[in-house]
Length: 197
Image 1 (spheres, rainbow, N blue to C red):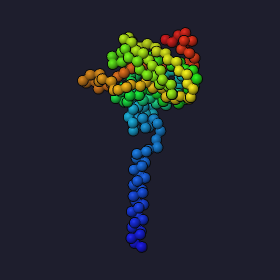
Image 2: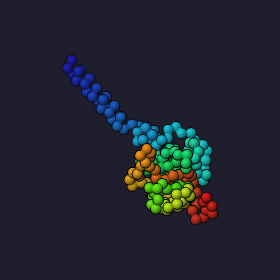
Image 3: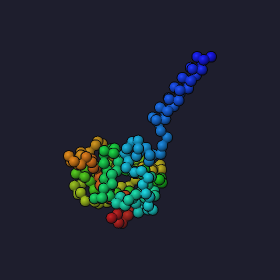
Image 4: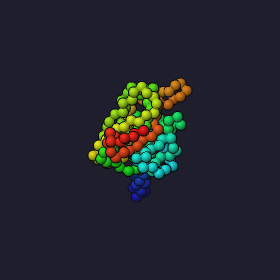
């Protein structure tokens, strides 16, 4: 009797430890929490929200994010432009949105390439659609407009980098890719928009 009770206690303790180990490996947390605390791809935690429509866009010079943005990933704030993609935070940089987009969307990205991105094409993915932004030698902020035809609801906009970018210098460990100042979502073809500035 005493032996069977001891075996039962040992089995219960092993089961409890296995359940705790499983919970540690598979935590049930929000996407924002996971990106900030676990994956370390985001610098956003409980960021202030401000009102903005998708047409007005995401103003990266303002503190916080518009109410239609859940969180960012792979992006570091910087007062020189608004924000920079930083491959130290991952090879994907962009936004998880609170509202889904479908149909025709013109995404206008006001951006500038770092010296590592000059004369390169960088994939921009919106939902399950992928296009490219072709950066030239001009390192001033300018608008890049990309048309998407979204057949399925899309809530993630991201730039993809094939490998980590070079460090900025011996003292500056950042791996900057694209400087972002504003991103707008327009519900018409980019060619139909007269003023993309």
